Length: 76
Figure 1 (cartoon, rainbow, N blue to C red):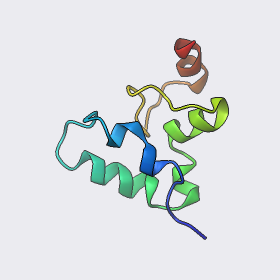
Figure 2: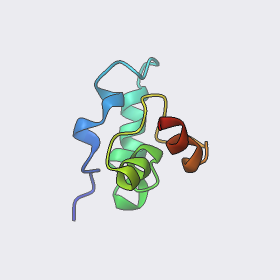
Figure 3: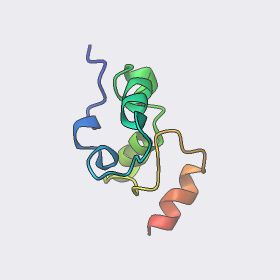
Figure 4: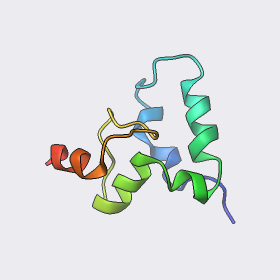
């Protein structure tokens, strides 16, 4: 069983300097990406990607508390 999110290697928030605070990337990766399916499946970016088949906007972080319907609606 793989404990790493299958989307983490291509997740845009880790590739474009979105996370400004020092160690933010490491913290998010430890809390979500590398903590097993029970954790990465709670990631808002993962949920959106699974629902619509494309990445969430860069403004959406793994722990985003905005309703998923609102995020998707604003993407359209």
